[in-house]
Image 1 (cartoon, rainbow over the protein chains, first blue to last red):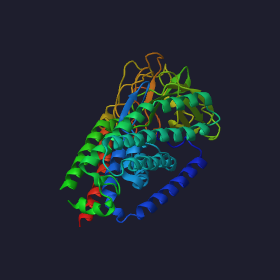
Image 2 (image 1 turned 180 degrees about the vertical axis):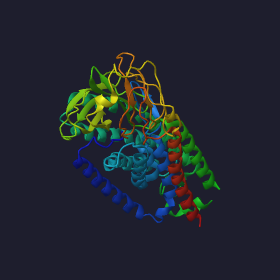
Image 3 (image 1 turned 90 degrees about the horizontal axis):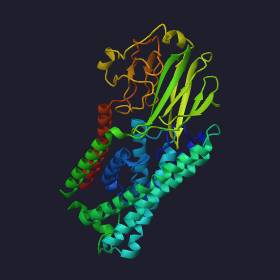
Image 4 (image 1 turned 90 degrees about the vertical axis):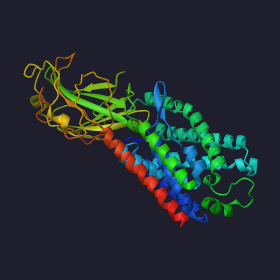
Length: 233
Length: 234
C-alpha cells in the first residue's frame, strides 16, 4: 500500500509530512518519559529491519498480489517506538528501492504509523482482562486484534487518501474500482498478520517477556523496576 | 547470553526473509520502445508490477513538454499491459508518460528530438530479419540483453535491470530500436537504427546490487541493535 511519488497532489504531501512530524514528536515525547529510552533501541532497530524487508514478501491474492505490512506487530511489540521505526524503514525503502517515494514519505508514514500506535493501544487492552497474568488465549486474542486491525486501518486510510486524489483527467470510476479491488485483496493479509502477531507476541512472552514493552511481567505488580535486572540475565 | 542468541536468531530470520524476497520488491516497471511504422514514429509502453503481474487496464496519461499540467493524451492499457501512441514530433523535448492503477504507478520520461523518423529509419531502409543484441552490452554490469518482441508481456528478470536489443517485430515488419526503462531512468535513443541499437547506460539495479544494498541496510539496523545492546550492558 505504499503510495509512490506523483500520485498525490502537493498539498496532500505537505499535510502528510505535517501529521508525520506531529506523530513523531508525540512518540518521541512518550519515549522520553521512559526511565531508559535507549533500552528498547536494539529491539526497535531489529523490528525496523523486519519491517524494511516485509514489503518484499508478496502473497498472491488472485488476481493480484499483496505484501506484508507488519504495522500491528510493530505497534504491539515496539509501542511508541513503532512510529519513528516506520518512518526510518519507509525512508530506506523509498531511497533504496523506489518503494513509496520521498514526496509521499509523510503520507506513507502517517498511513502506517497511526495504525501502529492504535494497534499498540489495542494490544495493551489484554492487561485489563488478564491483569498481568499470562493467559495465552487472552494474549493471543489481543495480538490477533492488533495485527488484524492494524492492516484494516492502513487500508482504510489509504482508500481515504487515494479516492479524493484521483486526477480529473483519469477515468475516476475505473480507478475507484481498482482501488477498492486492491483494498479487498488485503483481507487475507489482515488474517495473516493477525495470526502472525498473535503467534509472535505469545512466543516472545513465553521465551523473553521483557521484549514486550514496558511493564507487563507475569505476577509482577511493579514490573518497571524489575525489567533491567531481568534483561541483564 | 540470552540477548546474543536473540540477536543472532533475529539476524538469521531477517536474512532468510531477505533471500526470499529480494527479487520481489514492490513497485512498477515501465518499459517503452520507439519504432517507425508506415513512416510514423510510435512509442509503445508496457507496464508491470515488479512482482511480475501485468498492469492490465492501467490508465495512461501522456504529457507533452509544452504543457505539463494537462495531459496531451490519456488512455488505458490493454489486457497485456500495452499502450501505443504517436508523439507529435513538432513538440520536441521530454515527454512524460504516467501509468497508474489503484494508487500505484510510475512515470517515465522520453526525450523526443523531432528527428526520430530519420534516426530510427524506415521499414524499407533498415529491414531486419533476425533478432540481434549488441555484443558489447552483455559485458556491462547491470545490463541484461534479451531479444524483445514488441508485444512481449514477459517481465524483466529483476527489478532495475535493463534490456537493450534490436530485432524485427513479428507482427509489424517494423525495424526496432528497443530501450527498456526501469525505475524512471531515462534512456535516449540516439542514432540507433535497426540492428545497431544504442547501448545505454543503466540507472537501474541488478539483482546482485539489490541484494547487496538490502544487506547493507539490514546490517545497519542490526549493527545499531548490537551497539545499543552493548551500551545497555555497560
